[in-house]
Length: 531
Image (cartoon, rainbow, N blue to C red; front, side, top):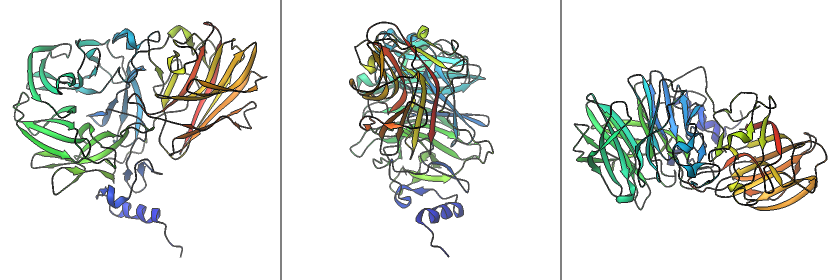
C-alpha cells in the first residue's frame, strides 16, 4: 500500500463531507498559491471559482440561469456579462457597452484619458421580462442600458445623473414602483435612495432619501427577502474591508437596523463586493470579488449565505457575529454541460469574441476581420505619445489568469509592416512588457519592450513570426519568439506583471507607428493554453 499524499487525503475528505464548508484556516489555502480552483471531483468546488480579474461582480438568477457583470474601467466594449448554470462554471456572454464614447470623449482612442476610471461597478437586474444594467463612472455620472435578451442588442446608454463624484449604484422594483440607489463618495460617502421611472430611464433627484453614510461605504446592493428589504454594502476598517447590511420593513426605510454579515479577512484579500442570490437548490450564495492589489486583479469566489435571525450571514457563521471566508463547498448544481471562459481565438468569426477588449474605444477603421478571412488585420497609426504602448490606440487585450501555468502563442504576418512600426504580444496594466517586431530603414527586427524602453534583436527575414509569453502563479512572464514555429528562443528579461489603475495584468496585441499612419500586421491565431 502506498501512503496517501496530503492533497489526496484532502480530496477524499471533500467527497465524504460535501455539505461542510472548509474555512481558510483548516483548509490551509494561501492567496495566489492555489494549484486547483473551481469545480472539483466529488461534487465540490474550490475558491476562487474564476481566478482572473472580474472585479465589482454583481449576480442575479433568471429561471435556471445565473448572470453576472464585471466592471471594465477604460476597456472597450465595456461591462462584461457572464452566464452560468451552477454559479461555479461560467462563460462569457457579451460586453454590454459597445461604444464608450456614449459616456464621454476621454474614453476614445484620440484622448485615452480614463485609466482607472471609466466603467465602474454596476448592478444587473431583470424586471418584467427585460434585463437592466445600471452603472456609474466617477467623472460622468450614472447610466442605464436594457435589453430583451441578455445577449443583446443592448439599448444605447441613457444618462440618469450627469454629475461627477458618484459610484456603486443599485436598483430595485418593489410595491409597483422602481427605485435607484447611489453613493456620493465625493461628499462623505453618502448613499441616497431615489424614486425611478418604471422603465429605468430616469431618476428623480428631488426624491433623494439619505439611507447610509461614512466609513468608505461602497458596493451597495438592495435585495428583498421574506417581506424585508436589505441594503448590503462594504465598509473600511483597520482590519480590512468587510460586509454589512441594513434592513427595513419598507423599501424606502427607515434602515435603522444594521448588522455585520461578513468578517474582514486580509489573508483572503477582503471578499466584499458581489451579489447575494438564491440558488436553484434553494440555498443562498454570495458571488464576490476579492483582491487588494496584485497582478492577478480581483478574483471571483462563491460563498454560502445562511439566513440567521433574519440576516444573511456570508461564509462560515462566527460566534462573534458575521461570517468568515470559506475556500470550498458543495456544488450548487450538478450540470452535465460545463461552461468555461473562452481565451483562444482563431479569428475566423465576423466579430471579436467577448474575451477581447480594446484599451479605450478603438479606431474602428484601423482593424478588420474581413479583409483577410481567418486573420485579424491590425493597421498602424501614431500613438498619442511617441513609442508609448499605453498611449497607442487599438491595443487589444484580455484578462491574464492567475493559475499554475499559462502559455500564450501568437502567429503574426509582418510582411506589410512599414518603417516606424512596432507590433507584437504584450502584457498591459499600469506598466507594460512585450515581445514583438519593429521596422526601421526597410528592415524588420525582433524587439523586446519594458515599458517604453526597447532592446533590438535579430533581423527577421521571413514574413511570419511566432511570439510567446509564459507565466505561472509567480506573475513573471517569460517571452520567447520563433522564426519557424518550432524552435522558440528566449528573449529579454522576465517581466513582472503588475496591478495598476484598479486592474490586474492583461495579455494582448499591440500595433502602432511612430512615423506615420502606415503599415499593418495580420494575426493568424492567439492560442491561450493553461492549467
